[in-house]
Amino acid sequence: MPDREMELGTALWRLAALQGGERLYGVVDGARSIKLATDAYLKYGQAFRSLFEGPSANDLGGVAPYLVEVDPSGRYLGLWAQRWGTHSGILLVTSAQPDALREHLRGLFVAEDEQGQEFFFRFYDPRVLRVYLPTCTPQEAREFFGPVRRILVEDAQPDGVLLCTASATGVQMQRLPVPAPAPAEPAAQDAAADGAPQTEGADK
Image (tube, rainbow, N blue to C red; front, top):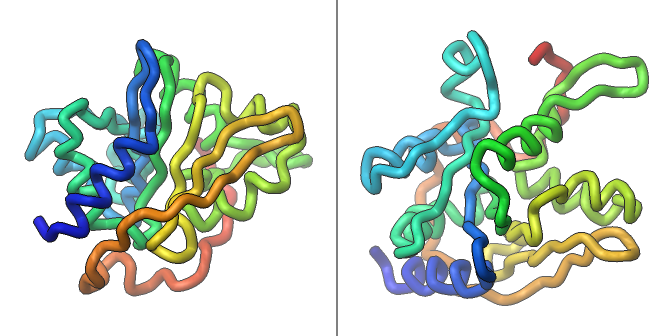
């Protein structure tokens, strides 16, 4: 693995700054990099779970968001570093148990508009989250973060990470420098997506 990617993985682990009982999780956008989710199991034996349930979990498996626990050794973050800058997901710090965290994230993912129409909120896309979080009121921030203490989001420029926390005024977003990975050939699933995707209505 290139030195810069190793440095980036180490920097992300350091910025997670886990406290007693906390764990680091990734929410991977399968539509951007399904391999980032499946390799968690294939290479490191880590479970990954779709945020879809029922038949949708199989029917939409190739584009689903996946919850992955990052192992304490930090090796999986090396894979994350290889995808840094490609909008493939976000990192979460929480003391919640996996089932409780997944339930909270599903509540964010399957949302309703003012007319009661369900849609999928792509909060795990860094481009979406960078736009949404600054608009949150304190109450919206508390509801969005729930049991999550901090969120690590790649910045628009790959040499930065946004450290996001809920605050009394909404969401605090602090930009911190990280080693930028070497430029890589874009994955096939990235070729069609240039701008931030629009949220689409759908059934859960």
